[in-house]
Structure formats: C-alpha cells, structure tokens
Length: 250
Image (tube, rainbow, N blue to C red; front, side, top):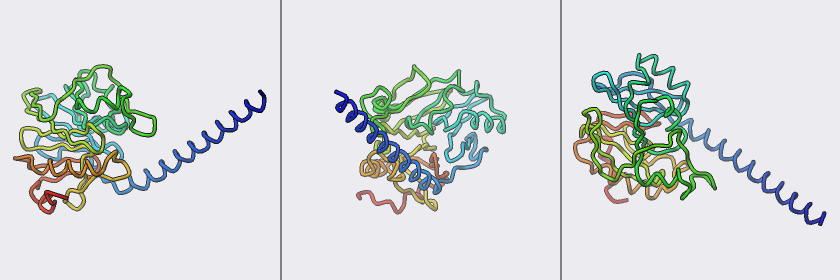
C-alpha cells in the first residue's frame, strides 16, 4: 500500500514538474511574440473614435453624443482607468462592450463599465461554458454573468450607431469583427497589420491559423470599409491598400 502511495505521489510530482515547464516555456515564447506588437497611444485617432492603450493591447471607443461604445475591454483594469482619465471619459458613460473574443487581454475592464451591456458572438460562448478549452484544459472567463450573443452578420443599433457583427473564426472559434456605420472595422485578433498590410495574427496565439487565414478572405470582401482597427498592431485608414495584395484564395 505504501509503495502504491509513493508511486502515485511520484507520478503526480513528475506531472506537476512537466506542467510547470510547459507554462514557463509558453510564457517565454509569448513574451517573445508580444515584442512585435505595437499598440496605439491613447487618444482620438479618427472622428469620434478613441484608442485606449493598455500595455500591448488596445480597446477602442466610438462616441455618440456624450456616450460611448467599447470594442473589447483591455488587459488591466487599473491601466484602463488611468488611460480613460487622460481622455476625460467616465467609465459610466460606456453603454456597451462588444467583445471581439474572450481572451484575458480583451476582457479585464468589463467590471469597470458598470452600465454597459456585454456582447459576444454565439460561437464564443463555448470557451466560457466549458464546452471548449482555450489552453490545455483551461477555458476563458469574463467578469459578467450576463451577456448578449450575436449571430454572424447580425445588425445591431446601439445609441443610434449601426453595428454589424461578422464571425471570423480561427484565433478563437467565436472571433468576431464589428463593422460600425458601414465604414469602421474593429477586428480584435482576427488579423494584424504589418507595414500597413493585413496578415494572419500570430500563429502562436491562434487556435486554428488555417481557419483564421480563410476568415481574412471573408473580411476583405466586406463592402464599404475604410478603417481597420486591430487590437495589437494599430490601425489604417486605407482598407483598399491594406487588403490589395491579399490573394482571395490561399
């Protein structure tokens, strides 16, 4: 009995050591990849569009009157609070948060936006309810028990602003881009910008890069887009040039 107990403890110890090394390896690789990210400084970057820089990631705000709609919710609640003060924007003025996906660096400020309704794509819910894992056995979570689910190409009207969601899976199964007033496209991690051109997001962080690449083929067909706002690699006001060299079939 004692020998069996010792074997179990020994096996458990080996498993824990392997797990620790895996996490260390993941962390070091993640840090290396993140060095290539270039979030936009906090400020008004287009008419009634504001970037909020939270270390290596941006969330964006679209203004209508004295209220705002947020696209994603950042990586660190305190950083977001500090950056909003620079803009003289009160968190209570944000009426909705539309999440491009539910990774931790996109959801941290949800509790700060106490008056906001939270939106995710219907397909992203599987990372929250345990039906699908994001990393090994771990799923995602958000600091809200209530959220509204959006279907692919569903059109919303929030504060008089037209918003259409486009399901673009790959980075996560429910990654969604949001087209605002038929011209502003908020992409989250569905793609990245490199010298003004679109590219697939970093393979290391994607759940399925092949599917993510196919999704980009759908994104470039969205009519009327002028601006692309990414979560980690800035923005462009020249959609045509950014997508010009992207082959329709890869």
